[in-house]
Image (cartoon, rainbow, N blue to C red; front, side, top):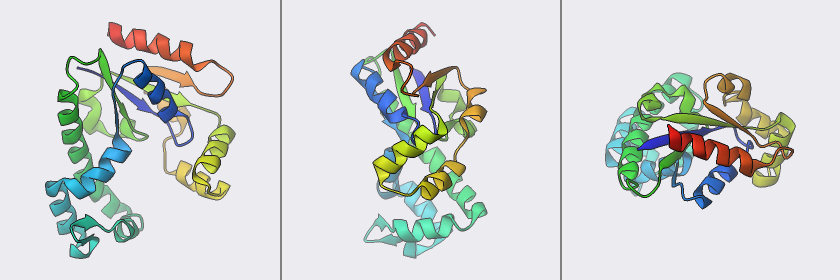
Length: 196
C-alpha cells in the first residue's frame, strides 16, 4: 500500500490538511495520538520503558506522564534511548493499522512532525509532503489553539525541524499561508500520489 507521510511543525496546518485528505477518502494515522495510546496499551513497550526508567513511571498499569516527561526531557541521552523503544512500537502499530486499510483507498497517510528524522520509517514511505506556513502565522495558530504564550510556542518550535530543512527532503509541499487556496494544492498531490 502506498503511504504518504505528512509532516510540518506545530501550527503549520498539517492536521487540517490531513482532514481534507480524509474527506477525499484517504485514511490517516495520527502518530502523536496513537503513540499516546501505545504508552498504555503496548505491553512490550511498557515493559521496556519500565526497565529503562523504573517502576514508578507506572501507576495502576497507566504511564505517569508527569514523571515520564520529567525524566526524559531533562536528559537528552535518556530521551534518545526512549525514542529507540517508542519508534519501533509506532512502526509495528502503523503496519498493523495499515494492513486493515488494504483495498479501502488508493493510499494512506501517516501524520508526524518528526518522521523525516526517523530512518526506521524510510522503507514504508512512498512519498512525503511538507505543510509549510510562515513563522508568525504558526505562532498565532498555536497560541489560539493551545492558549499558551508566544515563548512557549517558540520553545516547542525550537525542538522541531525548520520548514527550510524539511523542504529539501520532501516530494511535495503545501503552502498553508492563508493566501494560496488549499484544495487545488491537495488535489494535485492526491493525483500525483495515486500515479506513483
